[in-house]
Image 1: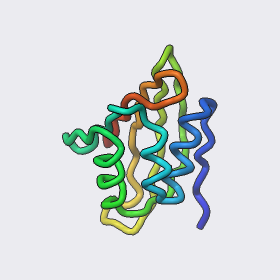
Image 2: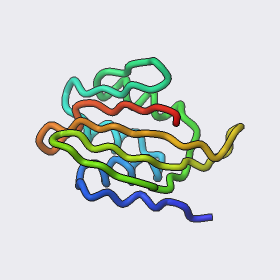
Image 3: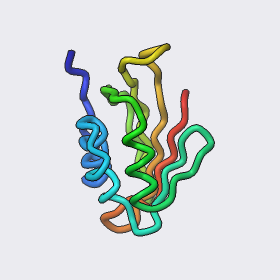
Image 4: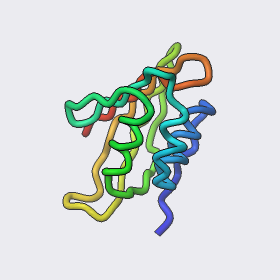
Length: 111
């Protein structure tokens, strides 16, 4: 089952989605600014160590990119996630705020 259609028009977002598809917490965290953050399930994870710890604890999933919107420093993806968890597949919104070539924030919400 290969549903990793994760290609984004924005290079750092494409790298982030590739790191998520590979379930590579270290590579994902390295894409964030020094005080970059992830907001997921009403929790905020700030800094590389917290982002690595958060992502390492998430189940591996495959993303199917449905839509992408870019406006200024914001890039929003809508993706369907497939994995070994109840309710699979689920659709998520990933909203990235980009600062140069790094991710300042990633907000993940269930659709």
